[in-house]
Length: 490
Image 1 (cartoon, one colour):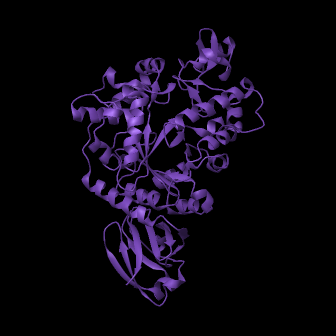
Image 2 (cartoon, helix red, strand yellow):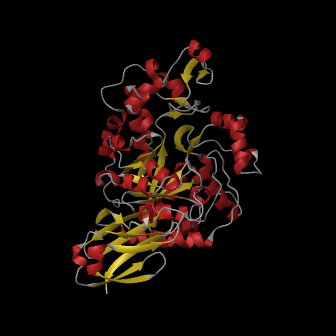
Image 3 (cartoon, one colour):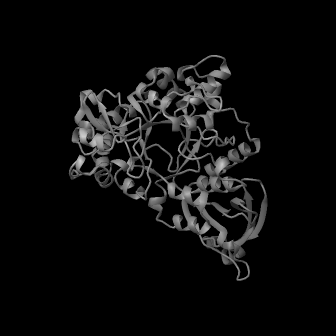
């Protein structure tokens, strides 16, 4: 990932509904090549390094037919979009028929134009890849049937929802091991050497069109998970893992590309070792959304080499909207955490405006929602502060308190230090006020007076270096309150 920042900020855009909305404002449907310059100017806020255009590949007519006739999906569509029409259902971006940009988005030329516009604004482009499955009308089913998990008529009779008969070819529907099969996709066989080479070739073509790739559900094709999921249907695992086989050659062709793994089940470290630059930090998301400060501190106590290769988020297209899921200020506290920790940060289009409706990825239109102007201002201040502080050395801080006041247990704190620059972040991860002292690691503070300026709200605190070095930084934060402090000599 040569040339990328050490801690990149990625902004995810749900391409189809975003482009539809741009077209409605312009008064006519637009392709990616026709997006006005002003829209590109305003797409990603300052402090963003890359834009992830989610869902640009050719969607499957067969998958679309499934989506339009599946009662469960239709219920979810209407819950998100009460005035749903047939035209709003455009098919899943993870039911890929071909890795060619969909004509309705402008095809390859439209994507090339979008990439050029982003590059003019100093932004890199990230696209998707789905290693586990493809659409049931993908050309490879007829051209390379051995790339797929195959079954028998007996398999289909025993589990009709798990298998699909395509012109007499019995193939498995795509799945992960903990949920029913997905109805609109078919399962690739990650153990097949021909499929691994084809994966390298597809990723090669994708990376000719962008600067990085986010690999969907990357852990599903690791030898252990894939073998346990499919058992006798796929036989013994190859000697080498899937991702080192695929990514080793790819790195030689695209040494500057960033590779991101969507990863769950505590497999982040394994996937980092198998070649990914960043892996989803779902564990931190769960602890920020549903846990407490002790759980967050425990997670952040892992080694820095691991921390710096995680991508942090509190919202994306798979998760509920933060404004709805994390109420009463918890969303802001969580946002401060993910923005100021080491590693990459992922933001989601609409998050800054406080959108509350999680849009199913099958839909090409999103509902109108009022923007939260105060939340927008908060996020823009936060991104500016994060861009200033995430450099140099990062340290997780100890926070202590007093026997009669245990609220310091609700605080999480960390610091950044780069030459003369010192920054301290303290977050109250509770719904009540909390006080404590954060132990600072800088003995060089002694003997001087210091001014601490909160980059989120502009408040100023004057402290002596002797107190800061000896006793730590005293903080008194309201429920879900935060400090992002620049520490400068007076």
